[in-house]
Image (cartoon, rainbow, N blue to C red; front, side):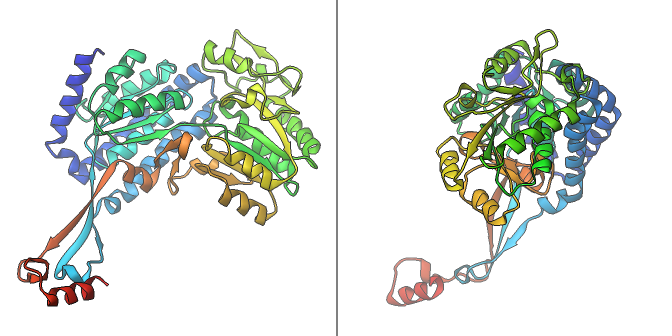
Length: 459
């Protein structure tokens, strides 16, 4: 779409928003129910599209994308009336007799820009929250996952008029044209580099933003960890979607006393989960495109690869790979990997490791495997990160009961469940003042009695 077409679409949605249809909670509920039923009707089509873009199996597509979206819709349908109610708060004595309350309301016309690595989940999940809050939405899926973007477009057209939800497909030109428009809120998931550009463009209109970015998320294996279980869960989280997961463990920091044993367990788990020949495993998946395949391949240091390392440029597949004797100065540690390479570093002092992690850009996630609760509490309280797990990976984002989001360089703002509803809502603070009483002390001319009274009321 060109700039004029996008401008007309934004204005069309803004005009519809001011008709106040989306303020009706029943209208929002019907939108969510319609979307839920349509997704169920298209489950197989969604799965095929994700497989075409990323090579994911049916099971993984449902577990990590479609199922989580349906769960978020169910959660919103259950709680939307409660989230939308006015919340009465305490009124200070100085404001007697009044009723004080907060009232959530939608921002208006929202832009959601989604990435390619979880193309269905990261498009529709924030859409669900935005609709529940009463906004209209323009959704921009990634050009790198065209099959899933096409299915999303068909589903949205079946469910909504473009006054309520519209999908804009395309690449950089469409992204630029969208960001040149005035939206009431922008929700972006993607790279830090593009996130900076989104924030820069949004600043022209003082548009609030949520940025879901990424970063190098550490995974700590301490000396007390259950190494077999840790390896199993780390291998799952690291190589899920071929490592193309924003909250995947980016690198491992293993206590020197257990590193060798941990690596042996990791090798066993890779073979158990992906087979002796992962490149021939139909459920393993692939790298999204040639550009990213070459970038990830270039991060491997053959002298430090102790497991895996084979690639197939024709199928864009890279084996689950492990690198040992890695330092923070190595090339693989200079950027987010976003692929199936696991660098393993060692440490001896937990305090020094915490200082090292905190000296780096704040990660989106952090994981620690430990049976020492004191060590786990030290890491989770002293390290700065978006969210994470103790003795597991990934799963903290798979619930509507907790917010998910970044911190510092890994993003700002959060969503899922109530936090998602709040993200796409502005909470208005309102005092409903009665007219039968009007205390004179706040009005000039001020007198000594007024001074005593103001100290009494506001002490």
